[in-house]
Length: 74
Image 1 (cartoon, rainbow, N blue to C red):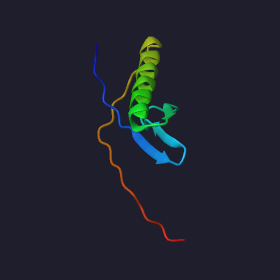
Image 2 (tube, helix red, strand yellow):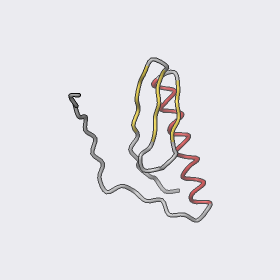
Image 3 (cartoon, one colour):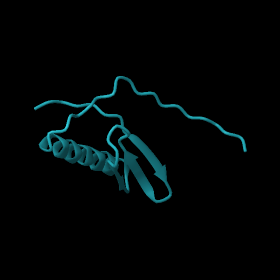
Image 4 (cartoon, rainbow, N blue to C red):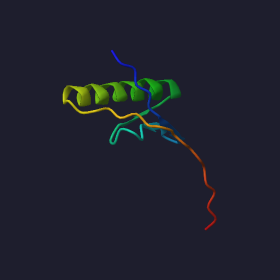
């Protein structure tokens, strides 16, 4: 069994939480609590990676990840 590390973005809004993994296109989920969203995104990533491995596809790992916040005046 191999360990993988992926970045995860979690956003909170009035309806709950939304999470996605930028390195895995289409890998996203939602939940009502922070704990639930962590469980959901972990499960989504696990299933995504299992599917890619079963299909013989390579799982690439990011070299580095940067996150920033920009303020834009309009």
